[in-house]
Amino acid sequence: MKTITVQAADLAAALKHGVAPARSTLTTILHARLRVDGDQLRVETTDTEVWAQAALPVRGDADFDILLRDDLLRSAAAASSGEIVIQEDGKVRNGRSRYAIPALPGAEFPTADDAAWTPVTLDAAALAAALRATSYGGDADSPNHAFRAVVVTKGLIWATDAKQIAAVAIDYDGPSIAVPVAQVPRVAAALEQPGARVEVAGGLATSAGLLRIVGDDTQVSLRLLAAPGTDVAGAIRGIEIGPASATLRREALITALRRFMPFVSFNLGKRLPTASLALEEGVLTLLDRKAEFQEELLDVLAAESDGTWRVTFDPKRLLLALQAITTDTIQLFPRASGVGVRTNLICLVPTGQELTDVAHVLAPITE
Image 1 (cartoon, rainbow, N blue to C red):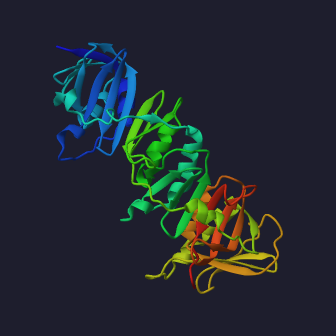
Image 2: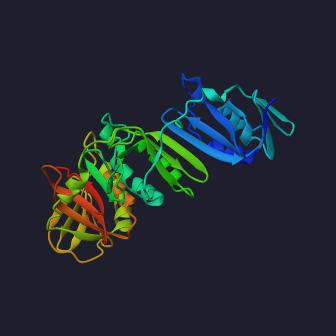
Image 3: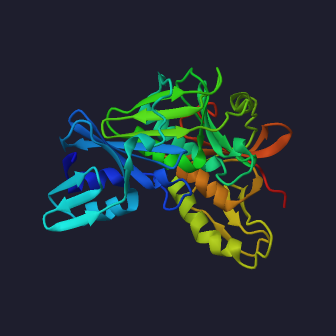
């Protein structure tokens, strides 16, 4: 009887990275694959869209390769301490504890490893940061696949749902990579692990079909969406920032917006949640739709600002954009124009950077 021995804590940690679904008509993907590779045990799971693999030290038969029910194996590993012994028939032992877990042959596991993977030159940490900073711009539930993706194109990472755009410049000159918005947290976490490198496979000459992140601790592969041909970089270059601007303290504005949200929501009915920022005689004011509630933002302006303007927006969207920026202050351009026939666009740029480096663009709301 083929047998392996691993540390229960290591196995439990490896299974935490798993993506096996709780329910499926495809029995095999309810299982985790345990496959010995040299002196390591590869723990693999999939939901057929994402493949996750973790490695841990192992002792035992070199050709050990089985599938065990993921949910039951997780419970057994979590309840165990010290060494855990696993047999190819699904019998698991830990001290005096015994578990019988349904098992299948490892060869039945659907795998993405047979793809022809090609390394791409992308800084893993920079890619992770840009994915996190732009993913809010997309819509994971949209029927339009172009809005469900964070798109990595030559020189730019971007996401949009047609009402906002988030874009970050990046040093990249490979095929387009359209990461599903829903998978960004998993992909970013994989990119942030030690030794992470990026590979792509499949798809067309200009667009990848599969993405794989290989690191020292785990490996994540996933199916990509078809990359849209939208020239977002060109659209951003075509934005005219307009004559009005203000330098704002980011955290102070976030705090003010959160404080104001109950007033925005009060008696809202079926209307869009809206708030307005108005600058007049050097005083910045936050108002609700009817100007029944208003607050002077004395601690938000980071520098004196001339001019008079008022802009109306969805405060939830503005909060998402502000939370995606990390600088202490931002430049707000409330009267930008471009991106088709849009006027009075709201643009946010981290202080010290250009719109072509980092852009957070919100469509205006007509009052």
